[in-house]
Image (cartoon, rainbow, N blue to C red):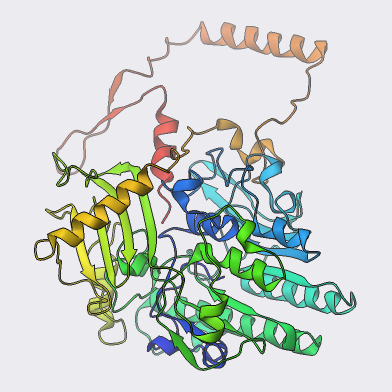
Length: 542
């Protein structure tokens, strides 16, 4: 799985970025050109691992922020746990982003035999650290143990080597099948890459695009090395390789989703149309392009079926897509719920429907049609970077991923005829729009509330040895009597010292700040919970 890889970041979609290994696998397998994900990292991963729509796991609202005690609920069995039941060895490598506030949420407690990688949504690709507000810490683990032996090593290379080593060791364990979730950090921000990969694209004038191209090159190389490791271990002929991005690309960081509308974090095609394919000698056909509807929840039942399990016993939203992928039959899907976030409501004064509140951000794909409601997010079309890097840069840098500033709350597109979503059919086909709104209403009746707990100050890495990691339910060391006495003495000393100073200003008081150059006087309201307000702003990760 790639992170934030855009539709136009692979050469088989016409990109100027060369991806020979991905292209070869796609040509030898089946390209999925009507494949959908969530518009953000954590919700996509939750759907992949649980086989359930976000509305059925409470993960429909936003990415999992470092200091919110949230993750994929323990009540939902994971794909890895189901694989373990089928006697598979299971390995997780790379980005987790499915909960870390309690140790129970970490990969080796969710069905994976081994884990090496990081827990949060992003971080430095070399230091393996994450700065979040005024908190800063290392984010790298071996199982449930903080692990920092990879400091200074590029994450794409670290995760590739880990996969190679697991495959080599697996070759010695004859008879036991293996499931690996290799979840690369690339090409998520920050855009960092070794100089030799960036140098391959020195002709690209836009710095962000050039660096992202280098990141894609390193990712593509890594995929090629993993495939070679499968061949060297003698297990390639019995392997199925699934490649997927978790969501659309971030144009503001050098990615491209051209010619699709929108960006990462939106319900438009650029946010939810995933780059994906299936490859490997097990497939009955190759060189195929599938236009059948497939959703990221479908991987769980599809892989369980391939592993010899009974996917019909799973209580999930995903469906087994193997007959469609392998034989070219019609997809068992007619529709995909893209998302429904009742906490994300547009500013329009009233709904345009009595069946479903169209101010709610929601989306559904049905046959060739796609209906969106509420505020879908950034709504413009970012041009192809290779056609005009200057224009691409000027538009990409202005992306905010927030409000769409549209006068409507219902959008109806024919994706088969208009994949760029340029023509809204809602006024021309009101009956179809009404039927799709009724479908959204039916889904709403089955949804669970979005779980979005407040920040927990205990998340600070400084309280965990400098590492991001579990912070809820930890047993605090009891203080001895002498420690209590020392603290009491320190408080007495501070009181004596402060009695000789000017009384401190009330934090809720408005304090004037030095006048700026243009003569305007700025005011700063120092509120008692200012730190939490800052953390709320930080929560909106790009």
